[in-house]
Figure 1 (cartoon, rainbow, N blue to C red):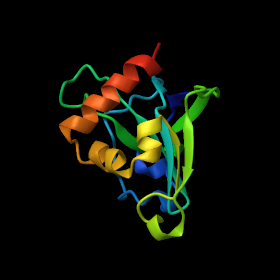
Figure 2 (cartoon, rainbow, N blue to C red):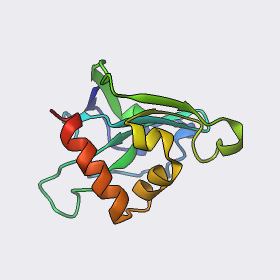
Figure 3 (cartoon, helix red, strand yellow):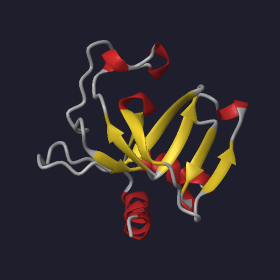
Figure 4 (cartoon, rainbow, N blue to C red):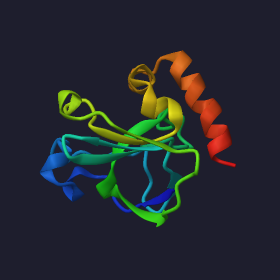
Length: 134
């Protein structure tokens, strides 16, 4: 699945996104196309897991969850290797549903490790990314 960035400010987001007012994200570039590695829902709001490659090294981030409202879908096909998980109400404030590569969907520690930037989990993400991007 691929998405095109159409905004990078909180002004374009619904309240449900829970971003501060007047927030601007320089890491995602309007008009740029990004691969989606996972789709997650937190408290009934959807985010895309993207790896943004930016020419400015300070903005070249490891994988990050971005609000879906900043993007439009340009390629709707998801890889056959994707998994889905319904985590449900007990974890609602963490994540309730997720689709993506096996490890992020079935292993909450990996999901959390990506958010916390743990080397082991980032290494696993980049290994998966290499095959995902082919």
